[in-house]
Length: 383
Ligand code: PMP
Ligand code: GLN
Image (cartoon, rainbow, N blue to C red; front, side, top):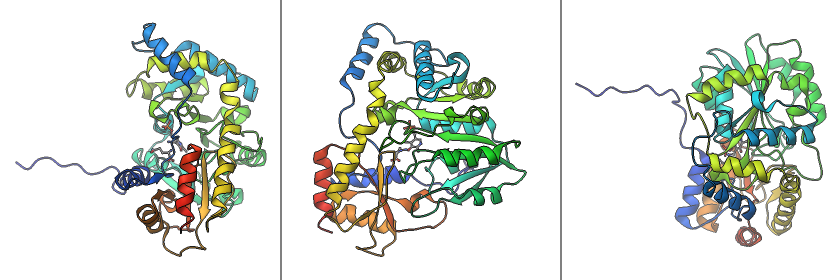
């Protein structure tokens, strides 16, 4: 008897570029400015609170929705930042990371044949998440080189089958952000339609130059048709924790939790207990933008001594650089070559497009110690 085979549900999906570049960097001992994670230590206060929670016996399943005091702290934080009242019991769910929150939101609502508007370059989980639910990605390019949304084009792409629009601000990989004017356009477009929104806000506090974050949570008319995903790992420098949360209306949250309860069910308890205390102090998150902005500016000063040309970064912990003064190679070849020959790993931006689109830009992650950034820039100056 032949062994039974499977027909791939994701035939076009290979290994994510983040793993490819991190493995190459590790193999070659290159400085890794590719995959987005900090190389500096996270808050000792927060790790101390986790150890304390473990010693205090918080080692069994947390509530499926999340540890109640953490949900309450998050609701207070949302109210103070965005002036929106969220019911912690019925509108917030703790998840094992932002990626899971996004997948769960999309799986909660998408049905085969639904169309989903997704802006490219797009974080690489979005399109497979749409596809595995039998829905259809409708891809729209952000406007190179400032990566703005062309809302007229969005209007033209909407059909009776459009079910969802995916947003991401601050944006990975470009560092672009949505502004209040974008939100007004969005309000106009979706009103009186059945279009839902997923807003990926995992870089929530990582926004620079004192620009306010255009969270969906500021807009009650948008929030009632949205799922908003966050990541503790991304903002508190502990990507390995894989902990995040989803915010939506009570009606949407009820359905989200049906998917969540038979998937992960509940998340790591001691980290939730620790965060419930840690986030009471507003400085823990209000200081993050300035902290990363310093790193962006430090890296930019170093990079001024290279032949790379920066594109603006307003948020996230990424900055794009053009390399047209160095080479006209495809970006994937260029990224691999500089990892091998100069010992610095970056992410080619074409990896964030479904079909070949190469503007000859690569993404560097500047959430690194000063010495790492100096080491990388020294190597890049030789190109
Ligand atoms: N969305 C974007 C845009 C990201 O860059 C990341 C980072 N991995 C995530 C979602 C997922 O975050 P997490 O690591 O919490 O799953
Ligand atoms: N979000 C991270 C990045 O863009 C990577 C996370 C992952 O490896 N999936 O680099």
